[in-house]
Image (tube, rainbow, N blue to C red):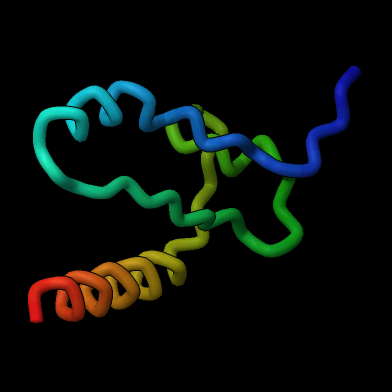
Length: 71
């Protein structure tokens, strides 16, 4: 048995090929609920249980980043 302490975000490797042709960015927002098992944070898993309160933080962070980049 392997004990996991973090999840590696392997969900964007095909997006990297897209970014080879068109400028862009890929961000990973961790949204695991406090105290939840690490297995609940795999984005494309049936066991994922996101902390939906994190969605607003991600939207505001990306909107701020985009506003600064476009200024």
